[in-house]
Length: 530
Ligand code: PMP
Image 1 (tube, rainbow, N blue to C red):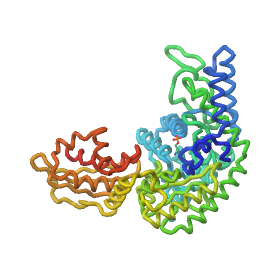
Image 2: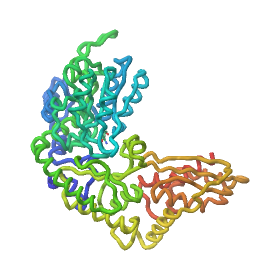
Image 3: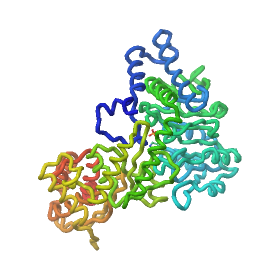
Image 4: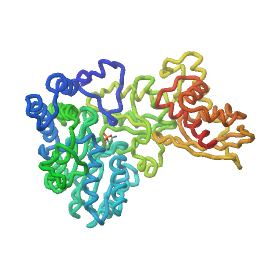
C-alpha cells in the first residue's frame, strides 16, 4: 500500500514505524483537502451562495462518512480538534452535572483520558478510581473493575487500545458492567480506529473519541461520537456562533446536536480530509487491513521472541504496537535507528502513571505499524536492534548508524559513549552549597546537581541521576569543564550561548529534540547556582 502514500515517494528509504503517534496520509485524503481549497472553498452553514452551499455539503458528507465508519448516525458525530479535545468536551459537559459519586478510569490511560477527569473530578469533589493491570502487567484487571464500578459511578472512561501495551480492552464487557450501574461509558478510540472495526452500538460506548491524524486523515480534526439521547441531555461546554437557534442579550436557545457542540467556524478542510480518510478505510475494509496487520504482528512477535536482550511489553493478543525495553536509553536507541531512516518513538508516550507506577519504567521505545508497513520495514528494525544489542549501539563507526559524522566527530562520539558509560563526578557531595534536581519531562531523564561555591567560583561539582547517553555524557563533561569557573559566567550561558557551549563540549551536531537532553545538565547547574 506504500504506493498510495506520497511520503514514501519522497522518502524511499524510510521505515516509518511511528504510526501510533500519527499515521501518514494517502493521496486520496491530500487530494480531497487540496481540491476543497482550490475549487470550492468557502465557510459552511448559513452562506446563501453557491460555494457556501457546496462547502456545507462537503462538510456534512464528511460527517456521514465518519458516521458510517463507526455505525452511528451523522447527528451523533461531533467534529472536534482531536481525541484530547473530544474527551475534554465530554468531561467539561458532564462533570459539572454530578455533585457526588465517582469516576472510574484505568491506569493504562493516555494523559488525554486521565487529566481532564482528574482535574474536573477534583474540582467537583468526585472520587477518581483507577482500574489496575493484572499481575503480568498486560491487561486490565476485570475483577478489580467489578469491585470499583458501583452504583455511585457516574462515568467509566477507558481506552479501547493501549498506546503503550497494544492491549485490546474488553470494551463490551466493561461497558456492560458500567451500564448495570447506570454509569456513562466513554471510550478513547485513538489507537483503535485505524486498526479494528469500531461499531459503537455493538461496543456499548455512549461516547467514543478519536483523532483524524491517527487514521490516515489530517491533524487538527477529530470526533466525539455521542449517543443521541445522551447528546440531547448534554450542555455545550463552549459557546459562540453557529450553535444557536435564537439569541437575546439575556438568553440563548441552542440548536440540536451535533451543531450545538460546534461553536465557531469549524476546521472545514480537516473534516473533509477526515471524511475522505473514513472512505479510504471503508474502501479497503477493516477485514483486509486487519489481515495485513495481523500477519505483520505475528511475524514481529516471533522476531522479538528471538531477540536477546530486548523485553517486549504487552500481551500476545494485540494491535501493531510494539513497546520494548533493553539495556540502553530509548533516546539513544531512537537516534541510532533514525540514522538508518527507521522512525520509532521513545519516551513515556504520554502515559506516565502506566510507565512510572505500573511498569516501573522511566521510558520505553515503541515501534508501531499501519496499513503501509511492509515486512522489510520490520526486518530492518530487528536487524538494527540486533546490532545495537551486540555493539552497545551509539555511534559505532564500524556499523551502520555512523551517520554523516566526520572522523573527528566520530572520535567525539566515542568520547560521549565513554563518558556515558563511566560518568565523571557521579557521586554525592556531603555538604553542598546548593543542590537542584531537574527533569526532562519528555523522557523522564533526571539529574540532581550539587555544587560547592567559594568566592564566586565552583569549587566542587557532582551529580546523581539517570538518563540517556547524551544527557549523562554532557553532565559528566560539564562537571570537569565547570570546576573553578566563575558562577556569574556560567549563568550567562543561556539561549543560543548555552546551546553552543554544550554542543562544542560534545563535539557532534545535536538535533533539536536531543538538545533538550544535552542541555539538561547545564540547566540544572544554573538552577542550583540561582
Ligand atoms: N489517547 C490515546 C490512546 C492516544 O494514543 C493519543 C495520542 N497519542 C491520544 C489519546 C491523544 O490524541 P490527540 O493527541 O490526537 O488528541
